Length: 104
Image (tube, rainbow, N blue to C red; front, top):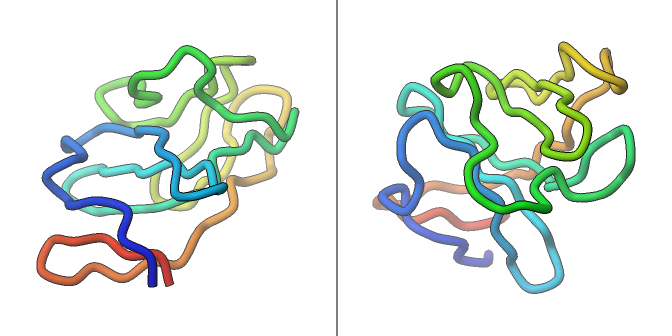
């Protein structure tokens, strides 16, 4: 297992890109729930956040790609608007232990 951070590192209603070794990840926290996705847009196969910062839009209700404004549901990664509609972000399995987040 690989440590990627603590829940406190990710504010509620945020979607933040991080790196873990060679992996570009997107850690999403919405309404207290945590989700981890590969930081790769299904449309271009590039990262969602070339400008950095949070990708959460609409008060954290959606994740928005900075490249093409595609929008994704935080809890499933499904694209609901934009050029990759119907596709989804790739979920990454993780374990939460005492507030620490580890990749499985």
